[in-house]
Image (cartoon, rainbow, N blue to C red; front, side, top):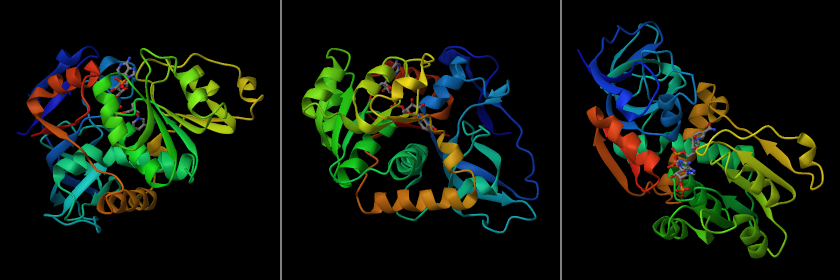
Length: 324
Ligand SMILES: NC(=O)c1ccc[n+]([C@@H]2O[C@H](COP(=O)([O-])OP(=O)(O)OC[C@H]3O[C@@H](n4cnc5c(N)ncnc54)[C@H](OP(=O)(O)O)[C@@H]3O)[C@@H](O)[C@H]2O)c1
């Protein structure tokens, strides 16, 4: 029987157990994917810790992977055994050697995209695509604020926004991360654990503020991000690495006519057509060198707990992938 990382209760990284699991036969529209590389996302930390109660327990974490189709159900038309694929899914189960999944979650991998690169950037790159091309369309000359700019999604956002001609301001936790954010196209980088990022953003933009703030940090930055917005600027709060945002009065948006979104990327990818269009845009951006996957650190699937400890440590800039 194949192995997977099973969690029986929420908690610290040590709740992640390497156990044997059964893999059922694929039903009509399902395929069996044998994983070659599995993506590790901050979302997995929220689910493991219990901040998100979206995984039925006991259950297998993980929302994305790349691998090879091993078997297909009777009504699968889009994929054949041997196809190289990647997927993102709301139904979890990626921290496993192999799994069954509906064909609607899969895309074919282009030959120039390796399994490791796909697992490292598929979900993060789709998130960047949705934020930059759908939630708020970044335009030439826009001031763009990216929090956690040296994180997985952050580095991709900075590169993509810079390519579009935006002027990108990044916030980061450490000087080493500042170097990574500058290399990814940030014009200015703020060490937001030491400096007042609101004052710095207003200073850098000569008092104007930013047209869009991409905020995945949540609790610690949300209200500051609102203060950084230009008139008619948009705040996309797409994560809560520091904790959930406190409730607030919608009327706070009125004085500068600001707008706010709390995007769930999976809703932008909810049909096979939407997923494949976003994936094509992502793979094009990768091929054209608009974005680069950067450093990728591989960790054995059985050591998934170590990957979580590293992700939560805030020390690293490399993307993490699990290898079965
Ligand atoms: N809405 C969606 O559908 C969607 C989809 C994908 C990802 N996301 C979100 O996007 C964000 C980025 O995901 P990722 O996988 O690429 O992670 P990541 O950015 O590589 O890691 C999270 C970063 O958040 C920063 N951070 C700030 N406060 C923190 C705290 N108290 N604890 C830990 N980290 C803290 C850290 O950067 P510094 O050290 O530089 O502060 C850390 O590196 C996550 O919040 C994730 O939930 C949302």
